[in-house]
Amino acid sequence: MGGLQPKMADKIGDMLIKSGLITEQQLQEALQLQKTNGGKIGFNLVKLGYVKEEDITSLLSEQYGVPAIHLEHFEIDESVLKHVPADMAQKFLLIPIERTGATLTVAMTDPSNVFAIDQIRFKTGYNVEPVVASEASVRKAIEKCYGGSSEMQLKEVMDDLEKLQNLSEEAEVEVKEDEQEMSEEALKAASEDAPVVRLVNAIIIDSIRKGASDIHIEPYEKDYRIRFRIDGLLFEQLRPPIKMKDAIASRIKILAKMDISEKRLPQDGRIKTKMKIDGKTKEIDYRVSTVPTLYGEKIAMRLLDKEGLKLDMTKLGFEPESLERFERAILKPYGMILVTGPTSSGKTNTLYSAIGRLNTTDTNIMTAEDPVEFSIHGCNQVHMKEAVGLNFAAALRAFLRQDPNIILVGEIRDFETAEIAIKAALTGHLVLSTLHTGDAPSTVSRLVNMGLEPFLVATSIHLIQAQRLVRKICPDCKEEIQYPKKALMDIGFTEEEAEAAKIYKGKGCKNCNQTGCRGRIGLMEVMELSDNLREMILMGANALELRRTAIQEGMITLRRSGIIKIMQGLVPVEEVLRETVL
Image (tube, rainbow, N blue to C red):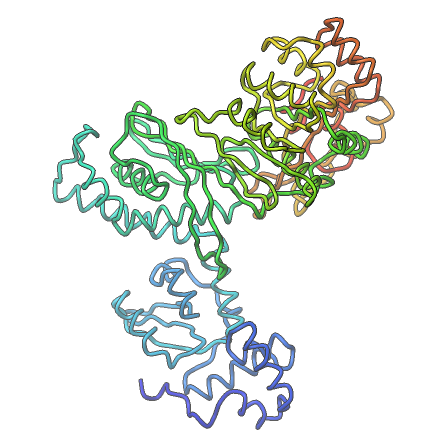
């Protein structure tokens, strides 16, 4: 190994100056960049455009006395990559390129790193033959071969789990079928087993990289599957060995601070941790729920991603006239604004956007949420705790003694909460809340069915907004398609629109997992209560009559909002049909 030690006098910077490839001033600039961004001096010189990668590679070869290679000319076989884990490749900036007999050839940025070579030799059992490559080309090769996602890490962990399962089968270890017989100590020990820890970490990291909003871990009679919800749809990711279900469930429950010995009752918890992903430290915040099913505990994990929270109302999906109506309502000093829609339709995001617009130093904002999903500076947020009697109704009563200007109620679920919220809206407070209804006009019927008097509904509510989330067309594989004019008119297009409309769809590419869709946008139905609509509510009008009048007064329905976005080339026809009705 002595031949790999570079001569101290022949540093790469000095060698480049001697060769006339860079000046002293350029070297100083690169050194300054190195202090800020890290990396080797050669990598920073290439970044600044002062030298070419080939020049660096040939000088590194001379410096270390080993052959130089250009990685872009190599097609590395997957079987070779398996010998060196992705985390080791990233840590030491190296990549295996070839195996011949008992010798593994490894491209390295620093072939003098004896520790890295020894680690690979110990891990693989092969002799290591180092060659030198530029830092930029090694980074590109790692990204290309191991992938931007953690699929390779998941594969490695799965291999480890399979080995463990095979070993237990070979040793004829008896696995107890009765889950209750496994002690808490045994569960904890199993959950701390290295492959289990690595698998759970890899699942969490992979879900973040793929943009998943939820992770579903589901046990069945003969198998165990993990699915991610990406842009509203579930995709199967992997099937770990079924024997690992207790260990995986226990690991997640420990992270979420749940009782690992309790398997008969549903539990809720939260995982808050920090992880290093792609060189960046990211705060992970998952809401975790467990439910006992026939074959074990089903686990659902909802990612609370503050970075993905859009507080800019212009980017949520409002049409300009709908946004104008919504902003006009939230800027009123009192009254109620209701946002409605099914679970995972973006209601919380819309409410937080409204709060973000109203959050000023002269305003007292209080929120009652179950749970508090995101912390907003300047708002007094209260987490509901049913076990101690702190529900929405109790919180609202307390809020009214706290001199609030704006009150946000996470959800109106019962008559008591609805009554207090409406009375608060009538006594000089602006109240924002959510409700589960199909569209904006049917919200009135829902409140009356809860037991509220029509005159209270008519006088307190300023605006009701219904929304849905639909998947957007992937911009990287977007293409125009032919759609029958008659079919478009059946959907709700006018004859002129059907004639002129250009319809687009995603063909499917690696950036959208071959689905043709990437990201989501809201369809918005905003019903502002005019004097005419208030009179109709007082007269006991049904949802159909209210809807007809609201449309005459300019309300854009959910279907119409979808048609506008189809004509703008933002969403495919199928998404709008899936989420809306005429």
